[in-house]
Image (tube, rainbow, N blue to C red; front, top):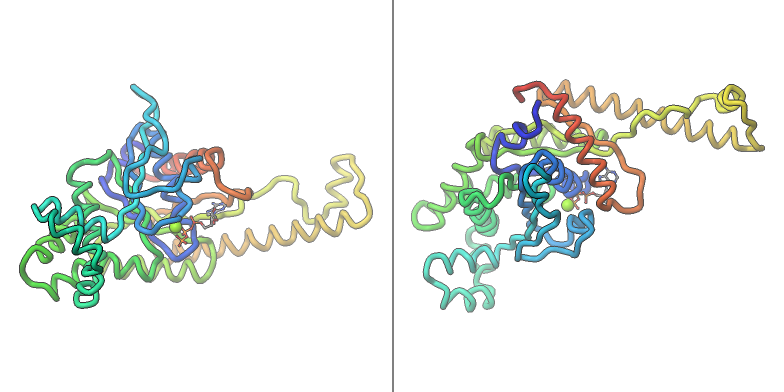
Length: 322
Ligand SMILES: Nc1ncnc2c1ncn2[C@@H]1O[C@H](COP(=O)(O)OP(=O)(O)OP(=O)(O)O)[C@@H](O)[C@H]1O
Ligand SMILES: [Mg+2]
């Protein structure tokens, strides 16, 4: 599938999955891949300190927009921008937009939002999603990518609109929740990318999350991302002594054992991951985008570029309709 078409399928992409599976890495790679395809993107974070900016070689984010990757000019790479949205700041914005700026500061600093949030759970999520919806409507970028909270929370986060509609039947909150739900369930406006590792528990959770989101929220599911795969390596042989002889080198004492152990570990890991990939395909009829585990201490711009390349290659491999 043509990457530009893939990324243009909906203005908003929500990246979700279990804690630590690589949501932020995938968010960063999606934005960079979209940029390569010539689209501008705005990454939205809802929890601070994700490490997203570091992958672009930049300082941590705040509520103001930051440019993570510059616009490459005509026919060049698209710009990548990012910002964090917190419920407090989203509420301030909302009140300001509705002519209530005089009370807004005091309301927020008095902690009134926490009181309201206790009475109407989901209100904070709606404030955030309401702000996302506003950015989506305004066409803040070709593509908006939301780095969602970890899975359990992601479902409540996305269900918040529906839950609030049941609790609050009239007024501005009801209107806001309705509009958020409209956006979430319109597959031409919003899709969710679920991320997992090729391991038993994360795969199980991904399958559950996928069905919950589809049934309970009616959200559109994009291909899933399986992150952290071990690529097959040439030259890791089960029998290192024979391999060394063939390559016309000799191994020092103990080296053969270490290499054999490494090869066995790798083979084991690869067969486990193949099993999980097959199981995922069987249980969830969605296309898979597979990303490699990058051997590095920290993912920086170079590693991110490599991941974005892989992502683009994977997208090109997808059928025209996903
Ligand atoms: N493909 C990969 N190769 C190597 N390291 C990776 C890869 N994907 C993620 N990581 C590393 O794994 C850790 C977790 O990744 P990340 O922060 O993206 O996960 P997350 O799902 O956003 O976590 P959280 O739920 O805490 O927000 C990070 O240290 C990240 O650098
Ligand atoms: Mg994260």
